[in-house]
Length: 310
Image 1 (cartoon, one colour):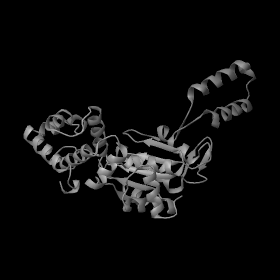
Image 2: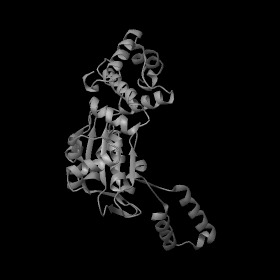
Image 3: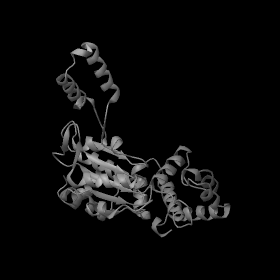
Image 4: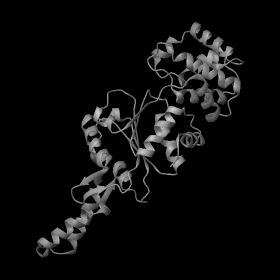
C-alpha cells in the first residue's frame, strides 16, 4: 500500500495514468481507510482505467463486475452448476437400487451436490473469498445501469463484506477487497451507497493533462499532431453535442491519425476521421465544413503555442 498521497500519485503515474492530486488523495484515503471509492463522471473520462492501473500498481488481481439492467445475485454472486448436479444425481441413482436409498443416503446426496465443488463463483463471491487468499481489486462498473433492487443487495454486501449462501452458510471476507465503484450518472445512485464510500468526480482533463495522456498512451504520435488532436478535442467539448468525446476517443483519434501516416492535421483529414471522435450522426452532422475549417485553424495555432490557450 502506498504510504502517502505522493506515493499514490507515483503509483498511478508508474502505470502511465496521469492523475491530479485530488484523485490521488481520494485513492490514498480509500486504501488507508478501507472504504470503497465511488467514481462518478461522464463516459470515457477514465474511471474504469483507475481500477485497472490500481490493480496493476498494487500487484493484485482485478475482479470486474459489469453492471446491466436485470443483474441479479445469480450473475453477481454465485449460482449452482445444475448440469453437473443432475449428472451426480443420475450417477448416484444408477449405483444403487431405488428401494435401497434411505433417508440418510438422500441427505448425504443433498450435502454432496450442494458442496463447493458444484458452486460457480461470480465476481462478488470471488472478490470476498479469492482462491489465492489475496484480496483483489473489485471493480463494480457502471452501477447506474443496474436496477435498484440489486443496488440494495450490494449495500448489504458492502456493509459487512459478506454474503450468505443458504446451503453453505455465511462467507465473510478475511481481508476486504479494494472496491472501486463507477457510475456514468445515467441515474442517481442511492445515498446509502454513497455514504459508505469516498466520492470523487472524474472530470474531463484540462488541455495540459490531456496532452500528457496522449504523449504517454500514444507515444508514436508526433508532438505537432498530439497538440492538434488535443486542441480540437478540447474545443469539441465546448460545442453543443449530444455526447462530447472522452479521453478514450482522443486516444483512438490519435492512433487513427498515426495509422494514416499523418504528421499534422488538416481540414479534410479532420472531416474524414470524425467517426473516431463522435459516435452520433447528429453530432457528426453538426461539424459543418465551416466548423471543420475553424477547428483546423485552431489546431494549427496549437502547433507552437501553449495548447491550453487554444
